[in-house]
Image 1: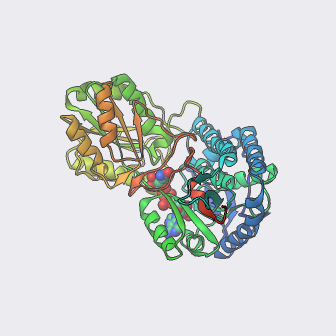
Image 2: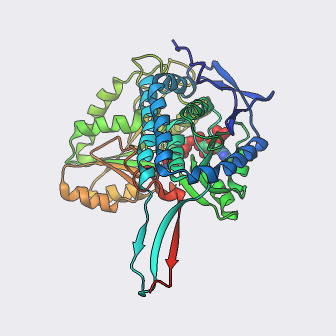
Image 3: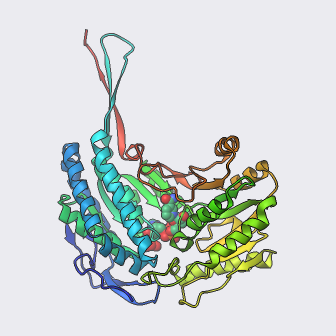
Length: 484
Ligand code: NAP
């Protein structure tokens, strides 16, 4: 049964300049597990997006001029509130997104960890001095906040994808406007409640929720007061938004789709590889950008690996996120489920063998059974697209060179995984794989201390780590002359 949603955190409209927006036009937020309406939310349009940009623009001089230690203190207060309200935030997240409550709690912790990390990094926004070419000069390099940051975020991690950007932007001294996905606005609005409680000043953090993504995106990517745009979502939409930003020469970060290979070499610890694959594949019912998508297994251990995998996947429980036994919740929409089912069906038509699952789950309309396909080949659609569902698609390879060639044969370059106990191979393969992030004998790679991001069609820019502030700061060079 669904626990009650916190009335304190549940909001009905956008948060702009520390005010809550209301409107007669509203849209329903639906629980994907049962189709029930959770809340009606005021549908903001371009006017509200413009108001949010204006508020952030007005707030920028004051916020960026605060001592870093003060910004750090405020981010820390916000962090403490996320931890305090972790369970309430997780309940809202599971209700609107579907993931098991334990995963939602982990996501709140993960989102909070960016606040904690960047509260520290705010104090380390240091510069350098460089030896000058002549004795009468000094060269000083400073880093300064870029200005107003606008962001658009997806539904699969409604808290963490937003906090990863907001925490870094605010730490650097930028002000922030975010448009969350229309399926999951409640988690973003709950964060605004806590930002206000933490004392984040008026206009520094704004959330615009609405259904006309194109019109809202147009404002956020073209308004001249926005200095930087940061997007997490699909590559198709990222291409449109990057093109819109190009007209105004805006700074851009793109965290886009992936098509991660997961390679199991013959010398791997097979039990560890199976456990790693469960994590990399089934978290959030397979709806993560770093999900293992193409499972490449050495021919000599293929049969043994499938048999261990079948036993493990058979044990997974599907059900609503509020059932403590559930390992997998629903997919975000019926459309998403249809897409997964179509990829599975077409793979089978083209010769893949169904080892497990391959159908809707009896838990409800939007639940899909954990599925294993063997004899998958690189030319099938299921190997070329993000599956975004709980489906393991197994391919075979005969040697290391073929594994690397298969793994790199994609336009995407976000995450890749491989399992091997041969240290020489570990370094060779790590060098050869064309991806921004590698899980080596590890299925869970995301954390605030590490630089998250991709290459190729998976985007550019990095979030988290000591590099995470770079995207939100400009380098300014000061040449001091006449010093002799
Ligand atoms: P999506 O369709 O690209 O939507 C993402 C966001 O963009 C949503 O807020 C959406 O708004 C908005 N949007 C859609 N069309 C737009 C347009 N024409 N102009 C402006 N905004 C627009 O992606 P999704 O299906 O929600 O998310 C899944 C994708 O995100 C996957 O490809 C996944 O790999 C990727 N992802 C990447 C990362 C990463 O860090 N690299 C992390 C998580 C997810 P509405 O909700 O209102 O449509």
